[in-house]
Image (tube, each protein chain N blue to C red):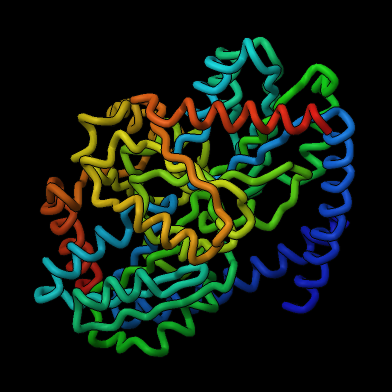
Amino acid sequence: MAVRTIEVRERVMARNDELATAVRHRLAQHRVATFNLVSSPGSGKTALLEHTLEDLGQELRIAVVTGDVQTQNDADRLAAYTEHLVQAVVTGGACHLDARQVQAALDAVDLESTDLLFIENVGNLVCPANWDLGETAKIVLFSVTEGEDKPAKYPKMFQQSRYAVFTKIDLLPYVPFDITRAETIARDVHGALTFFRTSARSREGLEEWYTFLRDQVGDTRAL
Amino acid sequence: MAVRTIEVRERVMARNDELATAVRHRLAQHRVATFNLVSSPGSGKTALLEHTLEDLGQELRIAVVTGDVQTQNDADRLAAYTEHLVQAVVTGGACHLDARQVQAALDAVDLESTDLLFIENVGNLVCPANWDLGETAKIVLFSVTEGEDKPAKYPKMFQQSRYAVFTKIDLLPYVPFDITRAETIARDVHGALTFFRTSARSREGLEEWYTFLRDQVGDTRAL
């Protein structure tokens, strides 16, 4: 029973990796820098994207694919901030997006007119770590209202991510969270992580985040 | 491929339900009220249990089974607050506990000397909704730092839970969260939900939570 489950899962994962490779190739052809945002539910993925679309949307052509278990709430929120496409994928119960869903969503995106693509994954610190979506990099969001030891408790997500964005740092005075200690714990599971410290409410750290995004698009354009 | 996956999954779930029924029978025989705590990572399951063990631990005999993807951090934290057993289950990557793991963990628990059992599930708003562990009821924790629309976005978890505990309400002045609206959204997906409003930091609402727990144990003892 257990063995059979694992066999099937391996075949599903292998198929996903093939599709992810195709997605990655397609995005590279169109020079679209693509970031897969992963985090706990409620860590502020949508809030960060709202600001990013509002503040960088005139300068960069940004498309978004949102993944949600049941609603299109995030896509609706984001559509208010951009003329570009926000494509909603409802996973219907699944705890992560897969490459097939992203591939299908991309059919609706004019990639030639896109500089930057965000994939807002299902809020979940476990499942999305295992699913390559063809992204340039995974970016894990980490709210300071969560415990400092999240990287140790969910190591795979932090190992699979190239960047970690602390969110809600305006709440630091009110929560028992030592951000330096959290960085140390995160570095223990993935030494090469690059950190951002942001607050969508106070706007702290957003300029550094935007500079990073501009550089990523520059890099992709220069390919 | 998809069909085969579903077939295997159904057999795994059916086997889980059998084991959960056996666990439920065993817990009922020993009159142990059992609550399966589910939530996003960082919503404060462990903090709520720390207070509960400290404040009710002399009065009620409380055992805990913690489920974590990788570490035993939660179990270690809780063990400092109780003389009773805290049994850690490491799921090794899986996004939820299953009934087989709970059944094995219970072998280490003296059920005859236990009034109340908490199962602290993996921090995840998706997967644990599908897995019956033989509990008396699921209790979903909902931090006010998360969005008000979490119940709409993760409806199955709120439908499967009989109680919803708001946590971190001391942060309400600093976050854009309307708790009445959140309750309305939660009631829309599950009309029979009973709510608690708590803060582990300010201790607000803890007495109501303890009264509820005492009543549950009373009910079970009276069976």
